[in-house]
Image (tube, rainbow, N blue to C red; front, top):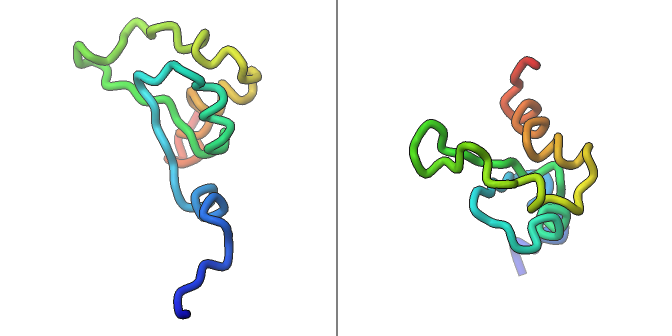
Length: 86
């Protein structure tokens, strides 16, 4: 059979995909860890009215993540992916 995958789909995801979230709140910390903290970025649509500004308690929704994990999700991953200066 041609075209067999050599890795698990989750391994391809971790090296080739990124996810964003905006309104999700239920089991957010669990979902972020399942996807891989390095592959998830918080999304907003500021300055449009639906942007959740001021932030709609995202910190509480990610309450089970460590501070380092939160930094990656809220800014660090975007900085790395888009090569943004601090």
